[in-house]
Amino acid sequence: MDIGWSLCTRTDTVQQTITEQLLDVFALMETWHNDHDNVCLHLSTPAGYAVVDTALRSGRGGGVAIIFCQHLKWSMVSLPACRTMELICMQHITASGPAVILNIYRPPPSSEWPSSLFFDELRTVLKTLVIFSCPVVVDGDFNLLVQRCGDSLSQQSTVVI
Image 1: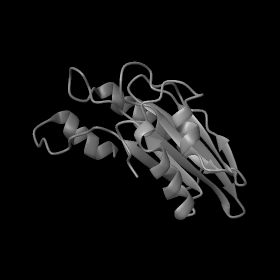
Image 2: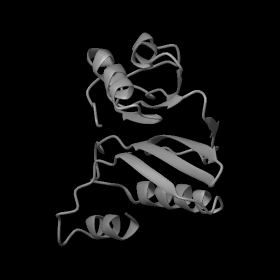
Image 3: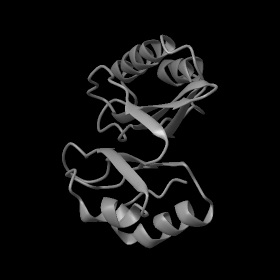
């Protein structure tokens, strides 16, 4: 579920969705939260769940979080620092093996349409996750337009993704 444009106006909806659908994990992007003690993150988190997050760096938009069921075995995955995106990654350990969830928010570029740095950083992050040799779920908002037939960066995005 992409809630976009601020979590604060949707805390009840997020909590209700997690509870009614009996979800073990719920990824959020573009939360617009700017610190880890954000009240909206906590209002969105049902009892028995925890939340991990990456707050937006500056300005408006951005911010990612993962709400997860506390009784399951989750651990944070350390990733290389990225300048072009906000991300958070967790590993879930089960009896049948691990699984990884990667939640990404890439703000719309302000000048050059997507920079090649974004693709370099995304490749590095994905290569980092290969070592886990397990299923990886990637979700998020990449803010990419892939319909530009003659654009080299648009062609590059279809190869990477």
